Amino acid sequence: MVCLGNICRSPLAEGIMKKKLEDNNIEGFVDSCGFESFHTGDSPDRRGVETALKHGVDISKQKSRLFKVADFDNFDKIYVMDKNNYRDVSAVARNEEDLKKVDLIMNVVHPGSGMPVPDPYYGGASGFNKTWDLLDQATDVIIGQINNKTFLKE
Image (cartoon, rainbow, N blue to C red; front, side, top):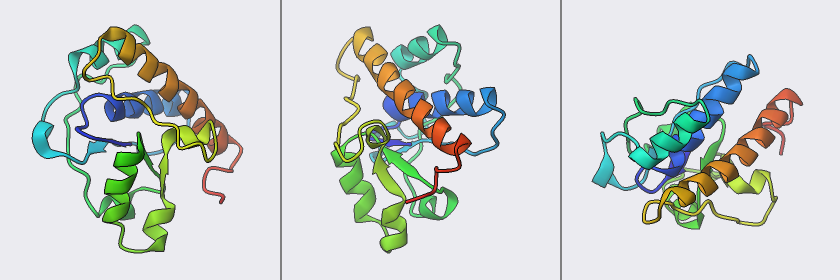
């Protein structure tokens, strides 16, 4: 799960996905990161932490980190939040195999739409609620793909 600074959208996506994996007794590793270093080592935005807690998910212990090229080796899928994230991650892909792993997370709900998850950083709590709702939808689809064994199908 990749966003710009790894303090708003991607920590929520990581937290939601981890909870759904646990709730569905699915083994898997989920992580999040950002592409800009200005928040490296920081905890998620408090508004995101509060939003997650309202839904029974604790993301407060997460720490922001930068995307690494090794992430292509460590993950089957790399979901990004918007077209800028897609551009940044794709620019460091080493080959076509790396590129095939990258997709906008909302494309799982609306295939091919390129729909972004808006960055709630400069808004209020309602922006974080909208972000939660979008990521909740997307992660439901991903869990369904895992359960139906279509997750890694092209």
